[in-house]
Length: 198
Ligand SMILES: C[S@@+](CC[C@H](N)C(=O)[O-])C[C@H]1O[C@@H](n2cnc3c(N)ncnc32)[C@H](O)[C@@H]1O
Image 1 (tube, helix red, strand yellow):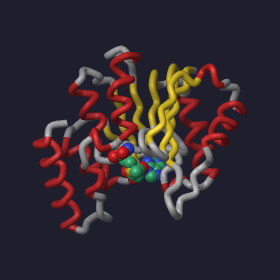
Image 2: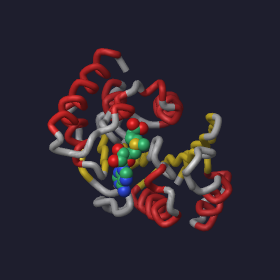
Image 3: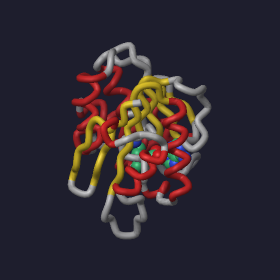
């Protein structure tokens, strides 16, 4: 993403945080996509596997950088949700795409509503460290996804308690998804990403 766009996003975040109307929005969210390994992977995977008309749901979209990248590549059938109204407000001011406040544990969409559902940088992230939340995310993603579900996990950070990679595989198997349906896996140091073909 062009640095000028990121500069605009940072200025919006600074202004919103200064008003104290909402809880602070992390400036780390306004870093470039190329600094985020899951997005780096998806920027290559999506053009190889999705049609421009495919519908995409990004759960935990934060301030909306990935939706903006998708739009720049012609993927305009996009919805981004995040539980934080402050982040959705920043996302919408940055680029008025279909950003909505929503909870990934209880998605307000019908079954099989989206060709691709992704959690880039979020599934098993710090606030979802409890098994309960991960499973809610997984089951809701599987419910609303039609073709693909992207998950990721981060490991070995002090104070975090994400599920092990083996555990994620076990959850997928318990839901009838065998290893041969997990079409891509990548390791980024202590991170791993799965794309499940449904
Ligand atoms: C680590 S940030 C990642 C944001 C973005 N995907 C990125 O990489 O820049 C985690 C995001 O998940 C959102 N979030 C936390 N719990 C959520 C939930 N239950 N449903 C939807 N979003 C949630 C937070 O508000 C935050 O924006």
